[in-house]
Image (tube, rainbow, N blue to C red; front, side, top):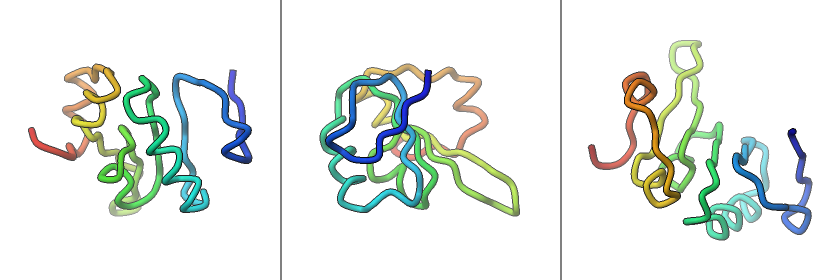
Length: 95
């Protein structure tokens, strides 16, 4: 089931949280801070968001949608990423 949160106050616990590019910068920063080490798969679609703390981030390259994975953030969230998925992604962080 998918839920839409329009405010930070409306947020309830979830397993996967998608942060759209149009999200307010203060809300985005609060989500990234408050959900650290909570076991939530954070997914984004904005340049530089993987470096800021999302696990999976989508981006455009040569008119194709690609994705990057921040493996350090995944470890902090106690998430395991399959080696097949990692083989397709651009890796962010030490590898």
